[in-house]
Image 1 (cartoon, rainbow, N blue to C red):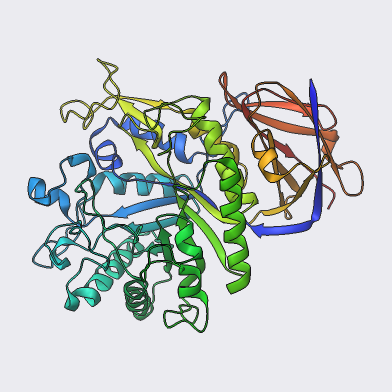
Image 2 (cartoon, rainbow, N blue to C red; image 1 turned 30 degrees about the vertical axis):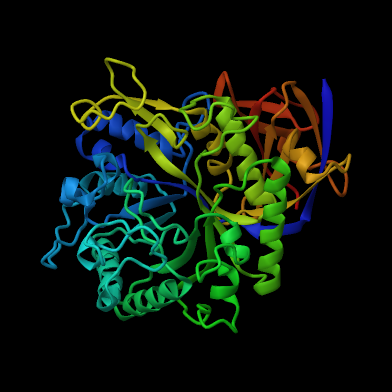
Length: 512
């Protein structure tokens, strides 16, 4: 059995971790409204719970952020929305006459309350399109070739007011929306009629953010605006589309930019992006994240990077069958590697998956649903899945849990070096290691991703020699083909991890 030796530098402090999350689009609108309560509660536990069973195994992955989609009204339009699948439409709180119906999005509101009840730290509301009553074409996605926000010129203040009204309603009813993200993947034209969406220029985002920030301030709300949600990381770091929808770190966070947002106190000091199209080959995954980190250092070294959406769209040597559903370790390890890269190379403080629940034959869910009687994958018959079915946790759920369940808000990532000085690319193809400390509880968290087909021995030291832990032991949590965050214990100087696994080590009473 081969040995990998790593050294943890407890004094080499990196980023302060914010949260791990997933979104309620779009399946939660049916599951949360119609499914039997017992099944809803069980799914919510898988996503949000930080409790353990009698053997110490986690009951869920303890997400610390929940992303709530504020719909634009395509559901009410039905077929007139031109979005063919009802599963990709969304209701809107505001009616066409300007009145509000707070019973809308009932299923999503159920999961929002379930997240809060289970102690999820942060709630974020995001939009894909302005409400249809404000759009230029009267629907919730754009016309082909459009580059600016699909909104009437006179309606931008109304859109901002709508978002603030939603935030105020929830806060008055005991659910604070900590963040509002008003645009999503603004680089795409969103004309494909598959879901709600709108492009937006940097100027659009700047104007909308200023209006929204002002409205939130006037209402004395504490919600903060988060900008970005770029379609891919390269849109943050340079001009790749030849128009005013990229180079967004400079656009929003360079104080000389006409779109500078740093003077607005209720805009989060962060830039967000999605990790699509930047994962393969692995050397490119590494290079793009190094470039992102360098760009942030150039413009604003204190700026946080949030990776706010990802699911697998790839077809490559590791994912030979493309985007079809996979509940196993192939997809889970691919995702775990990406999380490691986003956290350890791009220094992400926040990391979110796309769909918490999926009904599709696609690699986009943490928990999958399907009919009880047929076992068919991705069946979207209204008579079956809208009202009931069975749910299937994926290995991707548990692999994300190796990070989200144990790396809690406020923990600090610290430096890790491989004793054989392997490159970041070589590590990403073999054994990846990242480490985090909780200064208050003196807890050490080490996440190991083993992409190799052989078991490994891991030797861990710090710069001053041995780690000083309670009883010289780690709690160990393993996700593999046969384990879902299975709990165990291991001597700190004799750590064995299985082939093709994600492992989290927890050390207590760390001497800092």
